[in-house]
Length: 416
Ligand code: EZ4
Ligand code: CO
Image 1 (tube, rainbow, N blue to C red):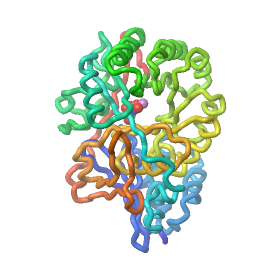
Image 2: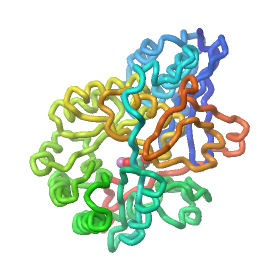
Image 3: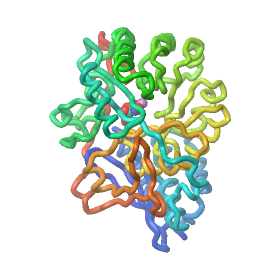
Image 4: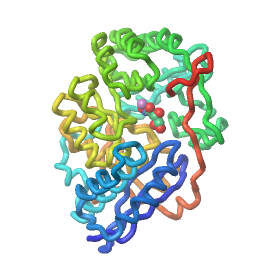
């Protein structure tokens, strides 16, 4: 079972995606996701120029060896581009192995550990009434856990708030309104947003109070601070949100310096989730060993595939830390399918983010997973259960898009 070809497929059905398709000489194909929002062509070039030539003729059954070959063999360690490329190869090889075995991937990973993956959706509103409508819509769709983000008085646009005028604003989601929140914009330069941490810290507790008063104590609620706070601001936020019993508070600090999380933990019992921009097990060592977080945000796509992320989850389990994988629309349906198979099989599953891709995305990525009663489940199709339609993809060529950048009120660059 040798690798005959590996194709890097860049397409834009609703937004940009980078997909790797590996074909073996005995006729199996496997798919992997290497989408890196706003930097897609770097991941595509890394694959095309430096990885695909190494794959041709390799034994497709040697998944671990291929992972080590690409990781150690590059000499240059870690990083989002490298790890997205390795993820795509790894996921495609697992897809092939499961197809060759005639099994859905989760069976190869140890079988089902639960009835399905509890997911959370993204409710948002420019103000509280709009947020309430969005929460109700999500509950009507069956969501049993909901992330809430709102506008902040005085700030023209804020991370995490869906714009009803997305199409007019020229988001990567284009004219397709299904995207709850898509920050990437198809513009020559990144959009510049403005940020005021004091206004945010004053406003957010009032939003949670309103939501708890309206929807009661049971609904699991999540919130993303998106890397914007200092340790002491993060501690203050966690403390002020304690009465509202969050499922998690995400990315309170940029977290390159993991030791600063000690200060946050000293002050609050609000559960913390971190890691959507991390890509290896090494990035988590201090966070896990010092029990500085409660949920791991890395997705299969950005953390070295099934092989890389499963190892991270096993390490997390030693400290009773659970999975909470990133699942925005910039993780492709291939990456999401991989997350579903992995999440179904691991012992320490926590929750899966699920934003739902636009219908046009599913015209290219033919998926078989299901969303019912707030849970995702894979089908019993062999492998990942996703097909890629080249013909439809050809009608949706790549078109550059950038994530926004963020400035403080005085014009200083800040973390977005
Ligand atoms: O900003 O996926 O928790 N979700 C997030 C996302 C990320 C985007 C970046 O590509 O933080 O909205
Ligand atoms: Co996030």
